[in-house]
Every structure is written in structure tokens, then in C-alpha cells.
Length: 118
Image (cartoon, rainbow, N blue to C red; front, side, top):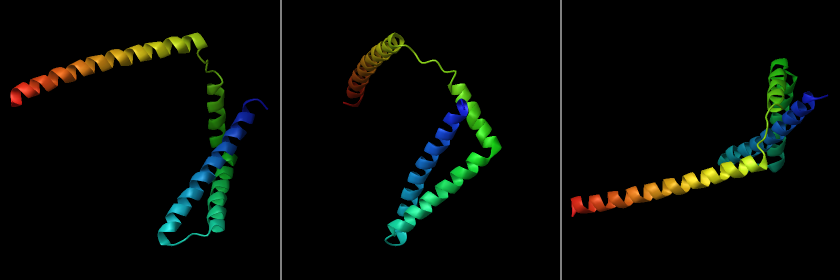
């Protein structure tokens, strides 16, 4: 089954996310006009998400693109713990240096505007 297993999982999870979003969207829109019935909201949201997911899953172009995406993602190499720690330290040091520089610039700018406008 290989990569297609991940494609099927991706479509399933995408359908769940779409159902959640659509149920909330239908409920929000319907509540403008009155109190929505929960059963109708659930049926409409889940139904549209299921149909949309099934249609996209059955389209050969969409399935092929999703398979290509999974194949490309399988080529990704994750950084080691040591590389992640080193990159984190670089980011923290850069943020500290930038904040010191901006703090000094702010102090000078505050002093200069105080001299000019007083």
C-alpha cells in the first residue's frame, strides 16, 4: 500500500477538519436568522464535508497530486537533536542582540525627541 495509505489518511483527516469547520460555519450563519436546530446543522455540515471529501478523493488528478505530496514529504530529513539545539541557541542569541539594539535605539530616539520638543 505504501504512500497511498498516507493519502487515504490525509483525505480522511481533511474530511474531519472540513466537517468541523462546516458545522461551525453553518451554525454561525444560521444563528443570524434564529436558533438553529443542532441535528440539521450537523447533518448539513457533515453531509457537505463528506460529499466534498468523497468527490475530491475520487478525482484522479487530486489523488495523484496528493500522492506526489506524500512522496515528496517522505524525502524530508528531520534535523537531529544537536542541530535543533544549536539552531535554537542561534535564534535566542539573535533575539537578545536585536532587542538590545532596538532598546538602545529607542532610548536615543526618546532622548532626541525630548531635546527637540522641549
